[in-house]
Image 1 (cartoon, rainbow, N blue to C red):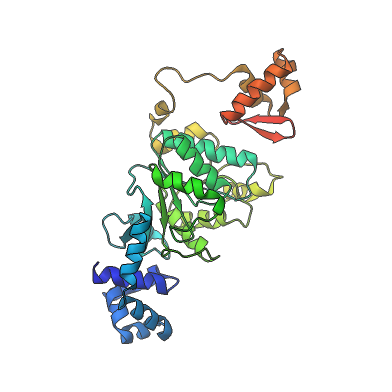
Image 2: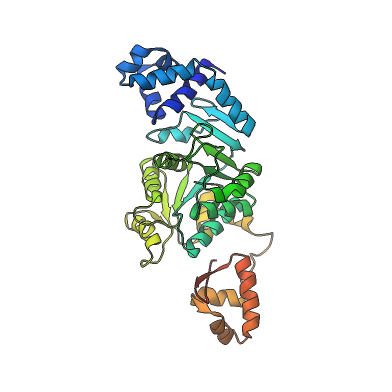
Length: 358
């Protein structure tokens, strides 16, 4: 380990905004190593003395080697600011990370779409996130999200179902499973073509201030950012704002105006975000003009069944209504509905009612 890497590890552990300090050092022609070894320089820059002593103590101890060993035992790689494999786009954020812990595949080539949204999403939002991520994965697009419940989890799951790559950017140490219900999902991500990524040291639990910093990475990695569902004050609105400040195109999925989980995403559309009105059109735009060809086997794309077409046309229709319109029995309709739901082509929009996700 180099002295520069030791210094960056100590800086990352000791302050809340290591990237801002690193930028200031760049402007002065100084390095993290000079900061941790020069008390006078640190204090002149406004570093609190107790913070500097803590950082200098870590730098001069065995802690950096122990931290690298913890990462290695967990199977994580550690990348430092300035490394060739450190993502270039991260420097566009206000407080870029100086250290990244990654478990899984990295780097992952190709275009990248970040998908974000509320933890308390509707069935519609979950289905959209999953279907969009699956289509993107099939087209060779990396899907990034935040590893949370709701929209994040649906996006990661959809990318895995599409046999593609997905990165979960965490607000904890890369070795901490949060939320607990995503233990299997995180294992699947890191064991396949994806990765778990964090700027926080090993073993660090989540704090409220961690998640805006995580959101900055999600925004910075994106070539395009999609907000599927978000209330007005949702964390996804922060991520969308960060992406806009970095010059990333921001897209939003339209939702019902009477639904609180869609008020934020609808407000983004009012404020100028691009409307994601069709999944396959978006995938083709992001991945390239011919990308839609990879969504289907060779030959013509499969045509939806008459029942699926009727659901798409009617929206919120019941099994009885479908049976009447198509002239088939209710048991036959219910059997087909079960298959379509299993294939995630429809979702329940209310008690006994169905909508299509095409």
